[in-house]
Image (cartoon, rainbow, N blue to C red; front, side, top):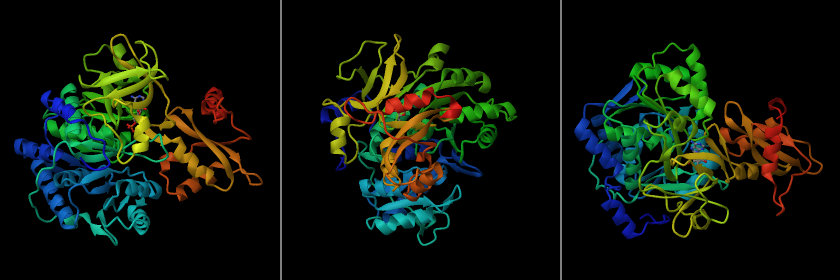
Amino acid sequence: MLEGCVPRADDEIGRLRKAGYWAGVTLGGLLRERSRAHGPRTALVDYDRRFSYAELDAWADRLATGFARRGISVGDRVLVQLPNGAEFVAVCFGLFRLGALPVFTLPAYRADEVRHLCDIAQAVAYVIPAVFGGYDYRRLARQVVDSRPALKEVFVAGDPGDFTALSELDKESAEFADPDPSDVAFFLLSGGTTALPKLIPRTHDDYFYQARITAEIDELGVDTVYLAVLPVEFNFTWGCPGIIGTLHAGGTVVLAASPSPDECFALIERERVTMTSVVPTVMHLWLEGRHWSEHDLSSLRVVQVGSAKLHREVAEEIEPAFGCRLQQVFGMAEGLLTFTRYDDPHETVVATQGRPVSPADEVRVVDSDGRDVAVGEIGELLVRGPYTLRGYFRAPEHNAVAFTENGFYHSGDLVRFTEDGNMVIEGRLKDVIIRGGDKVSATEVEAHLTAHPDVEQAAVVPVPDALLGEGTCAYVIVAPGRPAPGLPVLKEWLRGRGLAEFKLPDRVKVVREFPLTGLGKVDKKVLARRLAQQPAEAR
Ligand code: AMP
Protein backbone atom coordinates (compact mmCIF):
# COMPACT_ATOMS: atom_id res chain seq x y z
CA MET A 1 0.00 0.00 0.00
CA LEU A 2 1.22 3.46 -0.94
CA GLU A 3 2.98 5.30 1.87
CA GLY A 4 0.70 7.97 3.34
CA CYS A 5 -2.44 5.83 2.98
CA VAL A 6 -4.23 4.11 5.84
CA PRO A 7 -4.40 0.38 5.06
CA ARG A 8 -7.21 -1.99 5.98
CA ALA A 9 -6.46 -4.96 8.20
CA ASP A 10 -5.45 -8.13 6.31
CA ASP A 11 -8.37 -10.09 7.73
CA GLU A 12 -10.81 -7.44 6.50
CA ILE A 13 -9.32 -7.57 3.02
CA GLY A 14 -9.64 -11.37 3.15
CA ARG A 15 -13.29 -11.09 4.16
CA LEU A 16 -14.07 -8.57 1.42
CA ARG A 17 -12.52 -10.85 -1.18
CA LYS A 18 -14.13 -14.00 0.15
CA ALA A 19 -17.57 -12.37 0.15
CA GLY A 20 -16.98 -11.35 -3.48
CA TYR A 21 -17.14 -7.61 -2.84
CA TRP A 22 -13.61 -7.10 -3.98
CA ALA A 23 -13.07 -8.96 -7.23
CA GLY A 24 -9.31 -8.49 -7.60
CA VAL A 25 -9.76 -6.61 -10.88
CA THR A 26 -7.80 -3.45 -11.72
CA LEU A 27 -9.43 -0.59 -13.60
CA GLY A 28 -6.95 -1.07 -16.46
CA GLY A 29 -7.82 -4.78 -16.43
CA LEU A 30 -11.51 -3.93 -16.60
CA LEU A 31 -11.03 -2.01 -19.85
CA ARG A 32 -8.82 -4.77 -21.30
CA GLU A 33 -11.42 -7.40 -20.52
CA ARG A 34 -14.28 -5.28 -21.91
CA SER A 35 -12.27 -4.60 -25.04
CA ARG A 36 -11.91 -8.36 -25.55
CA ALA A 37 -15.64 -8.85 -25.06
CA HIS A 38 -16.95 -5.78 -26.91
CA GLY A 39 -14.02 -4.65 -29.14
CA PRO A 40 -15.92 -3.00 -32.00
CA ARG A 41 -18.74 -1.53 -29.88
CA THR A 42 -18.69 2.20 -29.17
CA ALA A 43 -17.21 2.98 -25.76
CA LEU A 44 -16.93 6.77 -25.95
CA VAL A 45 -18.53 9.58 -27.89
CA ASP A 46 -16.95 13.03 -27.71
CA TYR A 47 -18.86 15.25 -30.16
CA ASP A 48 -17.99 13.93 -33.59
CA ARG A 49 -15.25 11.61 -32.33
CA ARG A 50 -16.25 8.03 -31.55
CA PHE A 51 -13.99 5.43 -29.97
CA SER A 52 -14.65 1.72 -29.87
CA TYR A 53 -13.63 -0.36 -26.83
CA ALA A 54 -10.69 -1.68 -28.82
CA GLU A 55 -9.59 1.83 -29.79
CA LEU A 56 -9.86 3.17 -26.26
CA ASP A 57 -7.94 0.18 -24.94
CA ALA A 58 -5.14 0.63 -27.49
CA TRP A 59 -5.02 4.39 -26.84
CA ALA A 60 -4.61 3.74 -23.10
CA ASP A 61 -1.73 1.34 -23.87
CA ARG A 62 0.04 3.93 -25.99
CA LEU A 63 -0.39 6.65 -23.40
CA ALA A 64 0.89 4.32 -20.65
CA THR A 65 3.95 3.69 -22.79
CA GLY A 66 4.43 7.39 -23.52
CA PHE A 67 4.14 8.30 -19.84
CA ALA A 68 6.63 5.57 -18.93
CA ARG A 69 9.10 6.84 -21.55
CA ARG A 70 8.87 10.30 -19.98
CA GLY A 71 9.91 8.84 -16.64
CA ILE A 72 6.55 8.36 -14.95
CA SER A 73 6.38 5.10 -13.06
CA VAL A 74 4.36 2.99 -10.63
CA GLY A 75 2.98 5.01 -7.70
CA ASP A 76 3.81 8.43 -9.21
CA ARG A 77 1.11 11.06 -8.84
CA VAL A 78 -0.08 12.98 -11.90
CA LEU A 79 -2.54 15.89 -11.71
CA VAL A 80 -5.14 15.46 -14.43
CA GLN A 81 -7.11 18.66 -15.01
CA LEU A 82 -8.96 18.04 -18.24
CA PRO A 83 -12.48 19.02 -19.25
CA ASN A 84 -15.08 16.42 -20.20
CA GLY A 85 -13.59 14.74 -23.23
CA ALA A 86 -12.14 11.47 -24.47
CA GLU A 87 -8.62 12.55 -23.42
CA PHE A 88 -9.55 12.48 -19.74
CA VAL A 89 -10.72 8.89 -19.97
CA ALA A 90 -7.77 7.73 -22.09
CA VAL A 91 -5.19 9.48 -19.88
CA CYS A 92 -6.65 7.97 -16.70
CA PHE A 93 -6.71 4.46 -18.17
CA GLY A 94 -3.16 4.98 -19.45
CA LEU A 95 -2.05 5.89 -15.95
CA PHE A 96 -4.03 3.01 -14.38
CA ARG A 97 -2.31 0.61 -16.71
CA LEU A 98 1.06 1.91 -15.70
CA GLY A 99 0.17 1.92 -11.99
CA ALA A 100 0.68 5.71 -11.84
CA LEU A 101 -1.98 7.62 -9.95
CA PRO A 102 -4.16 10.36 -11.47
CA VAL A 103 -5.23 13.12 -9.09
CA PHE A 104 -8.65 14.26 -10.30
CA THR A 105 -8.20 18.03 -10.49
CA LEU A 106 -11.31 20.09 -11.24
CA PRO A 107 -11.01 22.28 -14.35
CA ALA A 108 -12.33 25.17 -12.22
CA TYR A 109 -9.26 25.06 -9.97
CA ARG A 110 -6.71 27.84 -10.22
CA ALA A 111 -3.14 28.39 -9.08
CA ASP A 112 -3.66 28.26 -5.32
CA GLU A 113 -5.60 25.01 -5.42
CA VAL A 114 -3.33 23.38 -8.01
CA ARG A 115 -0.19 24.28 -6.06
CA HIS A 116 -1.73 22.79 -2.95
CA LEU A 117 -2.55 19.57 -4.80
CA CYS A 118 1.00 19.43 -6.16
CA ASP A 119 2.36 19.71 -2.65
CA ILE A 120 0.12 17.22 -0.98
CA ALA A 121 0.32 14.70 -3.82
CA GLN A 122 4.01 15.38 -4.48
CA ALA A 123 2.99 15.31 -8.12
CA VAL A 124 5.59 14.71 -10.82
CA ALA A 125 3.42 15.61 -13.82
CA TYR A 126 0.40 17.69 -14.75
CA VAL A 127 -2.02 17.17 -17.67
CA ILE A 128 -4.03 20.15 -18.94
CA PRO A 129 -6.03 21.34 -21.93
CA ALA A 130 -4.47 24.21 -23.93
CA VAL A 131 -7.51 26.46 -23.60
CA PHE A 132 -10.90 25.61 -22.15
CA GLY A 133 -13.86 27.89 -21.41
CA GLY A 134 -11.80 30.85 -22.66
CA TYR A 135 -9.08 30.18 -20.07
CA ASP A 136 -5.49 29.41 -21.01
CA TYR A 137 -4.33 26.51 -18.81
CA ARG A 138 -0.76 26.82 -20.08
CA ARG A 139 -0.51 30.13 -18.20
CA LEU A 140 -1.80 28.41 -15.09
CA ALA A 141 0.71 25.61 -15.55
CA ARG A 142 3.51 28.15 -15.95
CA GLN A 143 2.55 29.78 -12.61
CA VAL A 144 2.52 26.38 -10.93
CA VAL A 145 5.67 24.96 -12.49
CA ASP A 146 7.74 28.03 -11.67
CA SER A 147 7.15 27.51 -7.96
CA ARG A 148 7.03 23.70 -7.88
CA PRO A 149 10.32 22.22 -9.12
CA ALA A 150 9.22 18.68 -8.27
CA LEU A 151 6.69 18.94 -11.11
CA LYS A 152 8.81 17.61 -13.96
CA GLU A 153 6.40 17.50 -16.89
CA VAL A 154 3.34 19.29 -18.18
CA PHE A 155 1.40 17.53 -20.93
CA VAL A 156 -1.09 19.52 -22.98
CA ALA A 157 -4.10 18.23 -24.88
CA GLY A 158 -3.93 20.59 -27.86
CA ASP A 159 -1.31 23.22 -28.73
CA PRO A 160 1.38 22.69 -26.08
CA GLY A 161 3.11 26.10 -26.15
CA ASP A 162 6.35 25.58 -24.17
CA PHE A 163 5.22 22.24 -22.80
CA THR A 164 4.84 18.73 -24.24
CA ALA A 165 1.87 17.78 -26.42
CA LEU A 166 -0.10 14.83 -25.14
CA SER A 167 -0.03 13.54 -28.71
CA GLU A 168 3.76 13.14 -28.34
CA LEU A 169 3.04 10.31 -25.90
CA ASP A 170 0.63 8.63 -28.23
CA LYS A 171 3.09 6.72 -30.40
CA GLU A 172 3.89 3.13 -29.52
CA SER A 173 2.75 0.39 -27.18
CA ALA A 174 4.48 -1.69 -24.55
CA GLU A 175 3.18 -4.20 -22.00
CA PHE A 176 3.01 -3.40 -18.28
CA ALA A 177 2.52 -5.64 -15.29
CA ASP A 178 -0.96 -5.17 -13.86
CA PRO A 179 -0.81 -3.26 -10.53
CA ASP A 180 -2.03 -4.88 -7.30
CA PRO A 181 -5.84 -4.43 -7.26
CA SER A 182 -5.83 -3.53 -3.58
CA ASP A 183 -3.47 -0.61 -4.26
CA VAL A 184 -4.54 2.97 -4.84
CA ALA A 185 -5.71 3.60 -8.41
CA PHE A 186 -6.39 7.36 -8.26
CA PHE A 187 -7.27 10.22 -5.95
CA LEU A 188 -10.57 12.05 -5.67
CA LEU A 189 -10.76 15.36 -3.83
CA SER A 190 -12.69 15.94 -0.64
CA GLY A 191 -15.46 18.53 -0.60
CA GLY A 192 -13.32 20.17 2.06
CA THR A 193 -14.08 20.89 5.69
CA THR A 194 -10.52 22.07 6.12
CA ALA A 195 -9.00 25.01 4.32
CA LEU A 196 -7.98 23.12 1.19
CA PRO A 197 -9.12 19.85 -0.38
CA LYS A 198 -7.73 16.59 0.91
CA LEU A 199 -6.88 13.61 -1.25
CA ILE A 200 -9.10 10.56 -1.10
CA PRO A 201 -7.24 7.42 -2.16
CA ARG A 202 -9.51 5.07 -4.12
CA THR A 203 -8.23 1.58 -4.81
CA HIS A 204 -8.89 -0.50 -7.92
CA ASP A 205 -10.80 -2.99 -5.79
CA ASP A 206 -13.00 -0.52 -3.95
CA TYR A 207 -13.82 1.57 -7.00
CA PHE A 208 -14.52 -1.34 -9.28
CA TYR A 209 -16.84 -2.69 -6.61
CA GLN A 210 -18.66 0.64 -6.28
CA ALA A 211 -19.14 0.94 -10.05
CA ARG A 212 -20.20 -2.71 -10.37
CA ILE A 213 -22.76 -2.71 -7.54
CA THR A 214 -24.32 0.57 -8.70
CA ALA A 215 -24.40 -0.65 -12.32
CA GLU A 216 -26.23 -3.76 -11.09
CA ILE A 217 -28.76 -1.74 -9.10
CA ASP A 218 -29.40 0.51 -12.07
CA GLU A 219 -29.61 -2.44 -14.48
CA LEU A 220 -26.90 -1.19 -16.83
CA GLY A 221 -26.16 -3.27 -19.91
CA VAL A 222 -24.75 -3.09 -23.41
CA ASP A 223 -27.68 -0.90 -24.43
CA THR A 224 -26.91 1.74 -21.77
CA VAL A 225 -25.93 5.13 -23.16
CA TYR A 226 -24.70 7.31 -20.30
CA LEU A 227 -24.40 11.08 -20.72
CA ALA A 228 -21.59 12.58 -18.61
CA VAL A 229 -22.88 16.08 -17.88
CA LEU A 230 -21.14 17.12 -14.66
CA PRO A 231 -17.34 17.32 -14.60
CA VAL A 232 -15.78 13.91 -15.18
CA GLU A 233 -13.61 14.46 -12.10
CA PHE A 234 -16.70 14.18 -9.88
CA ASN A 235 -17.20 10.82 -8.25
CA PHE A 236 -20.86 11.06 -9.32
CA THR A 237 -19.91 11.21 -13.02
CA TRP A 238 -16.94 8.88 -12.88
CA GLY A 239 -18.33 5.93 -10.99
CA CYS A 240 -21.85 6.00 -9.50
CA PRO A 241 -22.20 4.03 -11.83
CA GLY A 242 -21.26 6.77 -14.31
CA ILE A 243 -18.41 6.25 -16.73
CA ILE A 244 -16.74 3.27 -15.07
CA GLY A 245 -20.06 1.49 -14.45
CA THR A 246 -21.13 2.02 -18.07
CA LEU A 247 -17.82 0.72 -19.44
CA HIS A 248 -18.08 -2.26 -17.11
CA ALA A 249 -21.53 -3.00 -18.56
CA GLY A 250 -20.29 -2.67 -22.15
CA GLY A 251 -22.44 0.43 -22.77
CA THR A 252 -21.56 3.77 -24.36
CA VAL A 253 -20.40 6.94 -22.59
CA VAL A 254 -21.29 10.26 -24.23
CA LEU A 255 -19.36 13.28 -22.96
CA ALA A 256 -21.03 16.70 -22.73
CA ALA A 257 -18.76 19.74 -22.45
CA SER A 258 -21.36 21.76 -20.55
CA PRO A 259 -24.59 21.01 -18.69
CA SER A 260 -26.63 23.49 -20.76
CA PRO A 261 -30.03 22.13 -21.86
CA ASP A 262 -29.23 23.13 -25.46
CA GLU A 263 -26.18 20.95 -25.65
CA CYS A 264 -27.39 18.09 -23.47
CA PHE A 265 -30.85 17.74 -24.99
CA ALA A 266 -29.34 17.66 -28.47
CA LEU A 267 -26.91 14.93 -27.36
CA ILE A 268 -29.68 12.93 -25.70
CA GLU A 269 -31.67 13.00 -28.91
CA ARG A 270 -28.74 12.27 -31.23
CA GLU A 271 -27.16 9.47 -29.19
CA ARG A 272 -30.40 8.04 -27.75
CA VAL A 273 -29.07 8.54 -24.22
CA THR A 274 -30.69 6.30 -21.60
CA MET A 275 -29.18 7.60 -18.37
CA THR A 276 -27.54 10.68 -16.91
CA SER A 277 -26.70 12.27 -13.57
CA VAL A 278 -27.05 15.91 -12.56
CA VAL A 279 -27.09 18.21 -9.53
CA PRO A 280 -30.35 19.98 -8.55
CA THR A 281 -29.15 23.29 -10.05
CA VAL A 282 -28.71 21.68 -13.45
CA MET A 283 -32.07 19.98 -13.05
CA HIS A 284 -33.67 23.43 -12.54
CA LEU A 285 -32.17 24.60 -15.83
CA TRP A 286 -33.29 21.44 -17.59
CA LEU A 287 -36.84 21.76 -16.27
CA GLU A 288 -36.99 25.28 -17.64
CA GLY A 289 -35.35 24.18 -20.88
CA ARG A 290 -37.96 21.46 -21.26
CA HIS A 291 -40.66 24.12 -21.78
CA TRP A 292 -39.17 25.44 -24.99
CA SER A 293 -37.09 22.52 -26.23
CA GLU A 294 -38.47 20.33 -28.97
CA HIS A 295 -35.78 17.69 -28.72
CA ASP A 296 -36.90 14.10 -28.50
CA LEU A 297 -35.82 12.87 -25.07
CA SER A 298 -37.88 9.68 -25.15
CA SER A 299 -34.78 7.45 -24.93
CA LEU A 300 -34.12 8.56 -21.32
CA ARG A 301 -34.89 5.84 -18.80
CA VAL A 302 -33.44 7.38 -15.65
CA VAL A 303 -32.05 10.66 -14.42
CA GLN A 304 -30.02 10.54 -11.23
CA VAL A 305 -30.08 13.70 -9.12
CA GLY A 306 -27.71 14.17 -6.21
CA SER A 307 -24.75 15.92 -4.64
CA ALA A 308 -27.00 18.58 -3.08
CA LYS A 309 -30.47 18.53 -1.56
CA LEU A 310 -33.24 17.99 -4.08
CA HIS A 311 -36.41 19.68 -2.87
CA ARG A 312 -39.58 17.73 -3.07
CA GLU A 313 -41.42 20.22 -5.30
CA VAL A 314 -38.64 19.90 -7.87
CA ALA A 315 -38.47 16.13 -7.47
CA GLU A 316 -42.19 15.91 -8.24
CA GLU A 317 -41.71 17.69 -11.58
CA ILE A 318 -38.96 15.47 -12.98
CA GLU A 319 -40.73 12.27 -14.01
CA PRO A 320 -43.63 14.05 -15.79
CA ALA A 321 -41.26 16.51 -17.52
CA PHE A 322 -38.82 13.90 -18.83
CA GLY A 323 -41.00 10.82 -19.02
CA CYS A 324 -38.33 8.80 -17.22
CA ARG A 325 -37.50 7.64 -13.73
CA LEU A 326 -35.93 9.86 -11.09
CA GLN A 327 -33.28 8.32 -8.89
CA GLN A 328 -32.10 10.30 -5.88
CA VAL A 329 -28.46 9.81 -5.02
CA PHE A 330 -26.62 10.79 -1.91
CA GLY A 331 -22.92 10.33 -2.23
CA MET A 332 -19.51 11.39 -1.15
CA ALA A 333 -16.15 11.02 -2.82
CA GLU A 334 -15.05 9.38 0.46
CA GLY A 335 -17.28 6.40 -0.25
CA LEU A 336 -20.83 5.70 0.91
CA LEU A 337 -23.56 5.98 -1.71
CA THR A 338 -27.28 5.76 -1.11
CA PHE A 339 -29.75 5.41 -3.98
CA THR A 340 -33.50 5.26 -4.26
CA ARG A 341 -34.40 2.13 -6.26
CA TYR A 342 -36.38 1.77 -9.46
CA ASP A 343 -39.20 -0.12 -7.72
CA ASP A 344 -39.48 2.21 -4.72
CA PRO A 345 -42.85 3.81 -3.99
CA HIS A 346 -43.25 7.36 -5.35
CA GLU A 347 -43.05 8.82 -1.84
CA THR A 348 -39.63 7.27 -1.23
CA VAL A 349 -38.28 8.57 -4.55
CA VAL A 350 -39.39 12.16 -4.08
CA ALA A 351 -38.82 12.53 -0.36
CA THR A 352 -35.72 10.48 0.57
CA GLN A 353 -32.17 9.89 -0.57
CA GLY A 354 -32.63 6.12 -0.54
CA ARG A 355 -30.61 3.29 0.96
CA PRO A 356 -26.94 2.27 0.94
CA VAL A 357 -25.97 0.51 -2.28
CA SER A 358 -24.04 -2.35 -0.67
CA PRO A 359 -25.25 -4.89 1.88
CA ALA A 360 -21.81 -4.46 3.46
CA ASP A 361 -22.19 -0.70 4.02
CA GLU A 362 -22.37 0.06 7.73
CA VAL A 363 -24.09 3.28 8.73
CA ARG A 364 -24.64 4.75 12.16
CA VAL A 365 -26.49 7.90 13.17
CA VAL A 366 -25.07 9.39 16.36
CA ASP A 367 -25.62 12.32 18.70
CA SER A 368 -22.93 14.80 19.69
CA ASP A 369 -21.62 12.33 22.30
CA GLY A 370 -21.21 9.63 19.68
CA ARG A 371 -24.21 7.59 20.93
CA ASP A 372 -26.51 5.96 18.39
CA VAL A 373 -29.87 7.73 18.17
CA ALA A 374 -33.24 6.01 17.68
CA VAL A 375 -34.61 5.43 14.17
CA GLY A 376 -36.30 8.62 12.98
CA GLU A 377 -34.08 10.93 15.04
CA ILE A 378 -31.56 13.26 13.49
CA GLY A 379 -27.85 12.74 14.10
CA GLU A 380 -24.51 12.69 12.36
CA LEU A 381 -24.00 10.01 9.73
CA LEU A 382 -20.99 7.75 10.38
CA VAL A 383 -20.01 5.26 7.69
CA ARG A 384 -17.72 2.30 7.11
CA GLY A 385 -17.72 -0.25 4.32
CA PRO A 386 -16.07 -1.94 1.37
CA TYR A 387 -15.63 1.23 -0.69
CA THR A 388 -15.43 3.89 2.04
CA LEU A 389 -11.98 5.29 2.74
CA ARG A 390 -9.99 4.51 5.89
CA GLY A 391 -8.04 7.75 5.85
CA TYR A 392 -7.15 10.73 3.70
CA PHE A 393 -3.76 10.69 2.00
CA ARG A 394 -0.93 12.06 4.14
CA ALA A 395 -3.29 13.61 6.70
CA PRO A 396 -2.68 11.81 10.03
CA GLU A 397 -3.86 14.70 12.20
CA HIS A 398 -7.09 15.17 10.32
CA ASN A 399 -7.63 11.39 10.16
CA ALA A 400 -7.38 11.22 13.93
CA VAL A 401 -10.54 13.33 14.25
CA ALA A 402 -12.36 12.36 11.05
CA PHE A 403 -12.56 8.64 11.97
CA THR A 404 -13.70 6.77 15.05
CA GLU A 405 -11.31 4.32 16.64
CA ASN A 406 -12.91 1.46 14.77
CA GLY A 407 -12.74 3.09 11.38
CA PHE A 408 -16.12 4.79 10.93
CA TYR A 409 -15.85 8.01 8.91
CA HIS A 410 -17.54 11.14 10.34
CA SER A 411 -19.43 12.43 7.30
CA GLY A 412 -20.39 15.75 8.90
CA ASP A 413 -23.90 15.26 7.44
CA LEU A 414 -27.00 15.35 9.61
CA VAL A 415 -29.46 12.66 8.59
CA ARG A 416 -32.36 10.57 9.80
CA PHE A 417 -33.60 7.17 8.70
CA THR A 418 -37.25 6.42 8.02
CA GLU A 419 -38.90 3.28 9.45
CA ASP A 420 -38.45 1.54 6.10
CA GLY A 421 -34.72 2.21 6.07
CA ASN A 422 -34.40 5.20 3.76
CA MET A 423 -32.14 8.11 4.55
CA VAL A 424 -33.17 11.76 4.58
CA ILE A 425 -30.52 14.50 4.61
CA GLU A 426 -31.47 17.11 7.20
CA GLY A 427 -28.46 19.43 7.33
CA ARG A 428 -24.76 19.37 8.05
CA LEU A 429 -22.27 19.93 10.82
CA LYS A 430 -19.32 20.67 8.55
CA ASP A 431 -18.48 24.22 7.60
CA VAL A 432 -19.10 23.70 3.90
CA ILE A 433 -21.46 25.51 1.56
CA ILE A 434 -22.97 23.36 -1.18
CA ARG A 435 -23.25 25.91 -3.96
CA GLY A 436 -25.22 24.23 -6.72
CA GLY A 437 -23.38 20.96 -6.00
CA ASP A 438 -19.91 22.56 -5.79
CA LYS A 439 -18.49 22.33 -2.30
CA VAL A 440 -17.04 25.54 -0.88
CA SER A 441 -15.01 25.34 2.31
CA ALA A 442 -15.89 28.41 4.38
CA THR A 443 -12.56 28.25 6.22
CA GLU A 444 -10.61 28.37 2.98
CA VAL A 445 -12.40 31.47 1.67
CA GLU A 446 -12.22 33.18 5.07
CA ALA A 447 -8.46 32.69 5.20
CA HIS A 448 -8.05 34.45 1.85
CA LEU A 449 -10.49 37.23 2.75
CA THR A 450 -8.75 38.10 5.99
CA ALA A 451 -5.49 38.45 4.08
CA HIS A 452 -7.02 41.52 2.35
CA PRO A 453 -5.78 44.74 3.98
CA ASP A 454 -9.33 46.11 4.38
CA VAL A 455 -10.65 43.02 6.13
CA GLU A 456 -10.13 42.38 9.80
CA GLN A 457 -12.37 39.35 10.18
CA ALA A 458 -14.51 37.31 7.80
CA ALA A 459 -17.22 34.70 8.24
CA VAL A 460 -18.57 32.89 5.18
CA VAL A 461 -22.06 31.39 5.47
CA PRO A 462 -24.69 29.93 3.14
CA VAL A 463 -27.51 32.11 1.84
CA PRO A 464 -30.66 30.56 0.33
CA ASP A 465 -30.60 30.90 -3.46
CA ALA A 466 -33.42 29.97 -5.81
CA LEU A 467 -31.14 28.50 -8.49
CA LEU A 468 -28.07 27.32 -6.61
CA GLY A 469 -29.87 26.02 -3.51
CA GLU A 470 -27.19 27.76 -1.47
CA GLY A 471 -25.08 30.75 -2.38
CA THR A 472 -22.22 32.15 -0.32
CA CYS A 473 -22.34 35.31 1.75
CA ALA A 474 -19.17 36.77 3.25
CA TYR A 475 -19.71 38.78 6.40
CA VAL A 476 -16.74 41.06 7.01
CA ILE A 477 -15.54 43.36 9.76
CA VAL A 478 -13.52 46.20 8.22
CA ALA A 479 -9.97 46.76 9.44
CA PRO A 480 -9.57 50.00 11.50
CA GLY A 481 -9.06 53.10 9.35
CA ARG A 482 -9.67 51.19 6.10
CA PRO A 483 -12.53 51.57 3.60
CA ALA A 484 -15.30 48.97 3.46
CA PRO A 485 -14.47 46.65 0.53
CA GLY A 486 -17.27 45.93 -1.95
CA LEU A 487 -18.04 42.62 -3.62
CA PRO A 488 -16.11 43.36 -6.88
CA VAL A 489 -12.99 44.28 -4.90
CA LEU A 490 -13.08 41.10 -2.83
CA LYS A 491 -13.82 38.89 -5.82
CA GLU A 492 -10.88 40.31 -7.71
CA TRP A 493 -8.70 39.78 -4.66
CA LEU A 494 -9.69 36.14 -4.40
CA ARG A 495 -9.14 35.56 -8.11
CA GLY A 496 -5.72 37.12 -7.76
CA ARG A 497 -4.96 34.68 -4.97
CA GLY A 498 -5.60 31.78 -7.31
CA LEU A 499 -9.04 30.65 -6.16
CA ALA A 500 -11.58 28.86 -8.36
CA GLU A 501 -14.43 31.05 -9.54
CA PHE A 502 -17.12 28.96 -7.79
CA LYS A 503 -15.56 29.78 -4.41
CA LEU A 504 -15.96 33.56 -4.78
CA PRO A 505 -18.75 34.93 -2.55
CA ASP A 506 -22.08 35.84 -4.09
CA ARG A 507 -22.67 38.56 -1.53
CA VAL A 508 -20.74 40.64 0.99
CA LYS A 509 -22.13 42.18 4.15
CA VAL A 510 -20.15 44.57 6.27
CA VAL A 511 -20.86 44.38 10.01
CA ARG A 512 -19.34 45.90 13.13
CA GLU A 513 -19.17 42.67 15.10
CA PHE A 514 -20.01 39.00 14.88
CA PRO A 515 -22.42 37.16 17.17
CA LEU A 516 -20.43 34.79 19.38
CA THR A 517 -21.18 31.34 20.78
CA GLY A 518 -20.91 30.62 24.50
CA LEU A 519 -17.34 29.51 23.80
CA GLY A 520 -16.46 32.83 22.16
CA LYS A 521 -16.37 31.50 18.58
CA VAL A 522 -18.13 33.27 15.72
CA ASP A 523 -21.68 31.97 15.72
CA LYS A 524 -22.17 31.31 12.02
CA LYS A 525 -25.50 29.61 12.61
CA VAL A 526 -26.90 32.91 13.85
CA LEU A 527 -25.49 34.74 10.80
CA ALA A 528 -26.93 32.15 8.41
CA ARG A 529 -30.30 32.19 10.17
CA ARG A 530 -30.48 35.99 10.02
CA LEU A 531 -29.86 35.87 6.30
CA ALA A 532 -32.38 33.13 5.70
CA GLN A 533 -35.04 35.09 7.60
CA GLN A 534 -34.59 38.22 5.52
CA PRO A 535 -36.77 38.67 2.44
CA ALA A 536 -34.90 37.49 -0.68
CA GLU A 537 -34.40 41.02 -2.06
CA ALA A 538 -32.77 42.20 1.20
CA ARG A 539 -30.23 39.38 1.44
P1 AMP B 1 -18.59 15.25 -2.55
O1 AMP B 1 -17.63 14.35 -1.90
O2 AMP B 1 -17.97 16.48 -3.14
O3 AMP B 1 -19.49 14.52 -3.49
O4 AMP B 1 -19.53 15.84 -1.40
C1 AMP B 1 -20.20 14.97 -0.53
C2 AMP B 1 -21.20 15.75 0.26
O5 AMP B 1 -22.20 16.29 -0.59
C3 AMP B 1 -21.96 14.91 1.24
O6 AMP B 1 -21.22 14.66 2.42
C4 AMP B 1 -23.17 15.79 1.49
O7 AMP B 1 -22.86 16.85 2.37
C5 AMP B 1 -23.44 16.38 0.12
N1 AMP B 1 -24.43 15.59 -0.62
C6 AMP B 1 -24.22 14.60 -1.50
N2 AMP B 1 -25.37 14.11 -1.99
C7 AMP B 1 -26.37 14.83 -1.42
C8 AMP B 1 -27.80 14.80 -1.52
N3 AMP B 1 -28.44 13.96 -2.34
N4 AMP B 1 -28.49 15.67 -0.76
C9 AMP B 1 -27.86 16.55 0.06
N5 AMP B 1 -26.51 16.62 0.19
C10 AMP B 1 -25.77 15.78 -0.54
